[in-house]
Length: 501
Image (cartoon, rainbow, N blue to C red; front, side, top):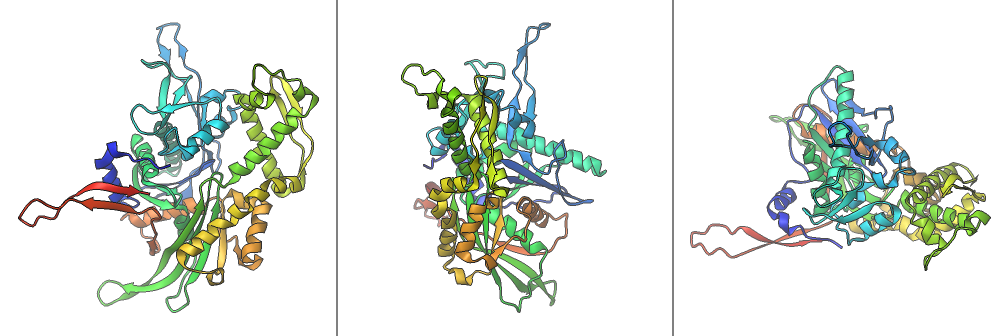
């Protein structure tokens, strides 16, 4: 379901015409890989050549979560003291204790109304969070029980406001890195990676979140293009050689994309009569699955853990009230849901490297501990069989979009945490052949490094390797014109937005 933001037409049309890239004379550029589960950030600044921004506890990626400590009434003044904000891993770790105060994985909610499937699925995963339609925008917002109440009850935060707080935290970490290097100063320009399927509504929501913290969006680069740029920065392509054609397969926590990219050397005119060689990165086709990723695999394991818990003697003793069944009572408990999900994520990582795992959760439901039966990788892969066609489908879609066959592809480049699941790797190897699988890029950081490099290339403050980028837009935009009533031959102005598919 795609909604039109007709109330924002003037600025909305400006955004459509200006994105994904805007030129800037920035002297410091922040690149952010906007993941559903984690954010990665990199900074380029005079004296700081393209460096990963570390979190306050020196991690190379930040969990995409924000939490609030409940506000309280001051005993001295009688006024509300606003809650502290907690970010990243610290916020995610609070979900098992205070699920109603933790807001994770906001990426999937950008530009979405409460009636859309993505919001429904989000609410099912986080039952302790209350979502309502926003009073100000045709999207969603959260009712916060931690912040002081507003005039109409609980304080509301839009998705863009919460994401803006997370972006501000990343900006602070980048400023700390610059200060540590002795290069303190303003960091106000940003380049984001976004999925190829992002619509104008989703881009606008991200743009708005950035503007709320004073960040100017230089570009929004699709994940496949960002990874392709990173791949090209360390390689030379001779104009006389045959171009290379690769599929960049990126499976993250919430989605999967496949991008057919052609890499070639190209001779272009330089100053005067001189010529120079540059690298060309051109997208030929894309395919995607908006719901396939590590989170879907976690969901299967979470369901397994819930069923296994309810089959234990302690699980069977849970009292059922009214017409509800024990499964719903446990599943809809916010703390229990958070603990199950955390254990499911841990199991997926263990089973990606080992043949079996033993789940245990302390105080899973009302002080009842859970010590589950052994789960094997074979069992896990049995749960994933229903997704086998979805794993390979983005590649077929991308090839069809590009008008190519698998025989025309040199390699499939892996990126994202989802490709570390052996079952996924096995399916892709069976499709394209083991010899065509490439793991030559950093599966965690290639996208953010490529996006930041792109920002440096758009800026006039840096000299970098020249890479010409050609992306495609999978969602067409049509505009109708009214016939001019003027007899002076003045060209008509666009008046109606026909479609945002």
